[in-house]
Amino acid sequence: MAISAQDVKKLRDMTGAGMMDCKEALTETGGDFEKAVEYLRKKGIAKAAKKAGRETKEGVIYAYIHPGSQLGVLLEVNCETDFVARTEEFQALVKEIAMHIAAAAPRWVRPEDIPAEVLDKEREIYREQMKDQKKPPEVIEKIVEGKLKKFTQENCLLEQPYARDTTKTIRQLLEEAIAKLGENIQVARFTRYALGSSD
Image 1 (cartoon, rainbow, N blue to C red):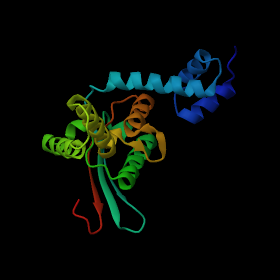
Image 2 (cartoon, rainbow, N blue to C red):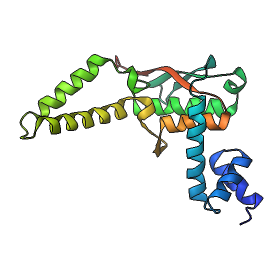
Image 3 (cartoon, one colour):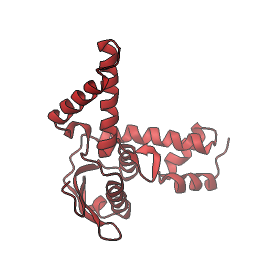
Image 4 (cartoon, one colour):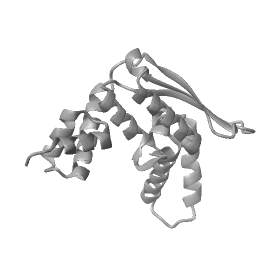
């Protein structure tokens, strides 16, 4: 089937992917826009994985103050080149992540940043909650690990559902940006300030 330039442009506007990638996605999916978006996302994740090992020494430190000045976020996001750091797309991504942090209040960037003692304490709490349940120990352990996974998803920025589009995580949002901008992008660190809070 022939894919029109109009369709390619429509998909590009929807996803921000390159023209050739959009044409390929529409060709592969028989012109089905929903499937084409999914195709591009999967392809983007593959591209992002290839770039994940590359060094990120450029980037920006961004300050976001929520309207009302009761909440603020200081965020560092890194990329490979100063050229990408200055692009509108990169700046917009950083702003989106900062606003998400303000809304969702993550405690860490990634699961491996959670201190071991915090995980041990959570496990202890979950086991305590389960102790009156008449369940075999291996079932209890599975439940505890499930609760721990949920704790990680709720508290780690990269695992959280994106506040503006809960069908994807912040990790997926980053992967899409990596595919689009062609560089490795990493969230280095952040601090969230809420008025009157010591967190």
